[in-house]
Length: 401
Image (cartoon, rainbow, N blue to C red):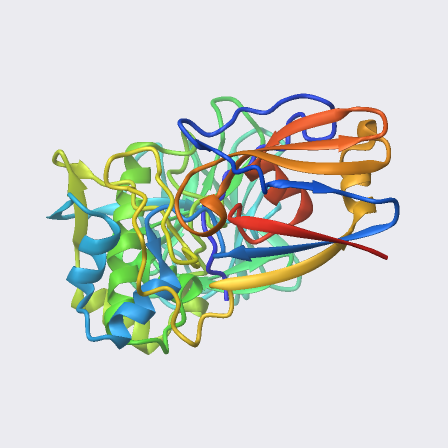
């Protein structure tokens, strides 16, 4: 169950004695935020929430739905100041599972190929083929081939090629297995003249959202929580469409964007949520909102980069079924020493700035890690990333081992 999203964490400088960029306007930490670390120590870390904390808490959405809130009120709580709008059209998504430079699909009725340089789509002939493929040929052109007992050339294209099947799913062959996708599958060059190729899925927005929602929130959760996720995911995709990841695709299919799994990921309950909210998005100043979301707020959301990603106390996140509202883990002092070897033997931890929201003064904005050879100042995001922690909202307890 992938619930934590877009935690864009920087590792640059994490292993050296270099201060990282810190959060803006955090409060000063309290004097109690200093811990002396003896030689051979355990550091027990207790925290709240999972993810960056911006926008909607997915566990919070479920908690709110269990209290009777409809998806509209859930969205208004987590994205205050936004309005309703609509988003239609198509979206293009990089298929990261296809790591080869060709595009190979299983043969099926009505399978067609289109040359992006122009011309009408062509329904592919039977020819006893089990598979069809587009790949860069020795002459530099994209070549369409089919497989019987071996691969056979069918024709070369003037541009790049794409397969589709008149609205039916197409099964993509990848190194990790066969995967069905709606819409079109295109073999796309990342830049003009490049012989490298990526597989890109071009499909209708709501067909894409059907393959996103059940990977971002359990489809079996309350319908209103799943509907809230559908609107947030559709809005996020609409925002990213205006800020594409690359020239040849708009979104990726991993946690760097939002997770997308094609037809195999779909579930009847989440598809129903997509249909119930068809086309609906959140807007701000007339444009799609940047609707970040994360697994759990821990009881307080975190301020983001835009006004509607405000820091607000979250009364819905702490329901009994949320295992990451409060969490704890224990690591050895050597974990810090391996991550920042320049400090020598770890001797102290001192949180110098927090965001001021919630228990312990809130999420860590800056922490000084001191050892026998020196100190390093890192952000809470860097600490979380390097040590593999759930969030930056945490405190410590040190004991001998």
